[in-house]
Image (cartoon, rainbow, N blue to C red):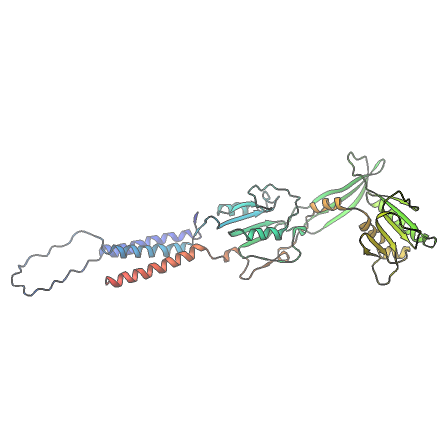
Length: 398
């Protein structure tokens, strides 16, 4: 497809009249014939040439082509060939956004093809808006395609961003657009027979936060609280530490949709989710994870000591529990939060600024800096025509 960046310059094609006028009005010089004597030549009247006729047609053609090439250079001739196209990509959810609608329409009128910013870059732009993309992988795939200009409209989601700033190629322009804020239910359980416990999340381009609400009612489809079995084994001298552990787990039950089943005597026939050993109790219960007391100095309160084995590095009291955030650390260690993490991630609207997400390549990041292939070709043709015109004119003494 042929287009011009400065189509108003095409009026200069009227300059073609100049070489044509020169060739039409010029007279070919008469041929001189040398003879020995004019004695027998009779005098006659000179016939006037009254017609207009072109001469030196090859030179006229070369000079006309020089004018045409010069005008095409001034007008900025461009063309799109297979493998040399312009794309505009929109992240799912942005293709119908009023914030970029005008820009999308303008780019499409200029010949840009609209694609979805998803793996494979389909032309169907109604993808999954909750999908967590990898911007680094998508940029790598774009670079592998023979594209000339690329404009990307993206939410710049934090979870989709690369760990460090990536170099943005000069032919790619990446524009971040803030996602609309959203409020969502993370989980909802029946707290009491007539009370609903709801964990609500709120996410915008600036932050994501959560809060819990208790309200009267009965949920029709409640989340089933996970049940975590705990074997709490301790020596007599660690009874107070065990009380702190039980209090922390009870607090988690009130704050989160989770139920702890605590047994202070283990059974050889049972396998527990966790075994918490304080002191040196008689044996350890069979469990998926072990948390044991092993006092260390200058260590975090919970320390991993091996596969599925953690150590409690301090004796427990209320001051230690508050200062070292015992409840939060136990929640992160013992509660399976994969499902809740998935819901939170799908609704995360936090945005990474363009300046942090991408590092510009040398030479600038504007798509205007890319040399158009048509310009190079036109210059080569123009130079060749100028050389040919001079050679023909010299040979014909023009």
